[in-house]
Amino acid sequence: MKASHFLLIMLAATIIAAPLWLSPYHVSFFVTTFMSVALAVSWNLFSGMTGYISLGHGLFFGIGAYAFAVATAIFGLAPSVGLVLSATVPALVALTLGFVLLTARMRIAYFAIIMLGFNEIAKTIVANVKSIGSSYGLTLPPLTNRFFAYYFLFALALATTCFAFAVHKSRWGYGLKAIVADEIAAETTGVGTVAHKLAMFAASAVFIGLTGAIVAWNWSYVDPYMAFDLATSFNMLVMAVFGGFGTVIGPVLGGVVMSLASEILSTNLPQFHAIIFGVLVIVLMIWCPGGIIQAFEIVRGKWTHRARAGVSGVIQ
Image 1 (cartoon, rainbow, N blue to C red):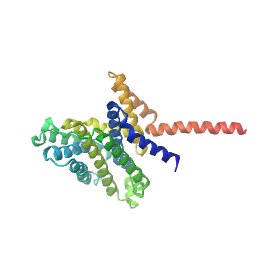
Image 2 (spheres, rainbow, N blue to C red):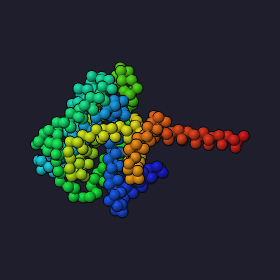
Image 3 (cartoon, rainbow, N blue to C red):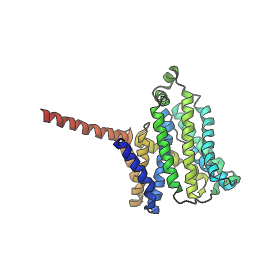
Image 4 (cartoon, rainbow, N blue to C red):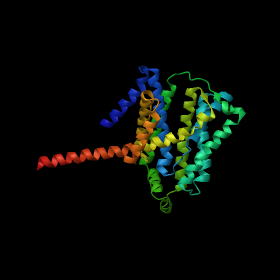
């Protein structure tokens, strides 16, 4: 067994056992972190791997949350059925929207704005439908296991990352890279650009919808303004870009680092944490547009150069 594989297994085992000795505060922090990783990686599944930036992926978060809430709170269905619906309904919506938007070779800027608009349209519609609580929202049955959200979101973040890694290393992934490089050229060489984009759009929606359902269930409440909050969409984008747009590990690092930084700053500097956090993100984006991954490569390159220089000096 490779050392890296052994370390990953030990890390996973530590995370699984951690709630046994962690305080409720720290469990809550890890729940937020796992949610952030799942959202960042899910957003990157589509936008990072196709080049189509979405500013409205929070749409699927809200749909997943409401699909679960309506199934369990209104129709009284089992939570397992609600979770299936929270994955299925966003996927169907993504396929429908994708068939209309992605087959038209729409410019990326237009696609981003249109997705933002759909998020706001969904929020307005849900806020005005009385049968699903309108603007007052819905109260969900509480979680019976206090660690359920912790373990489910950890498993979801892990599954999303593994799925992204599998796609990245597959023939399908090479087709996606071709789309990012030049979509027209990719199509002329036989890459099914529409099928690739639709599949990743739906896959992204599935993972984000499940995340929305678990977050709503963990809070025991959902309303349109929480479910379709624009901040959710922008946070996905920022975390993925902060970590490393288009990479597999980048969004994971982005979700972890930004969750940790936000928690530290909001706890110690509650009046200024948003400003400081924004400045930190801007500085990194200017210095390293490729995010944390690029910063790591720069540092590693410098250390490698120094090591080689030192060896050369010893030899001479």
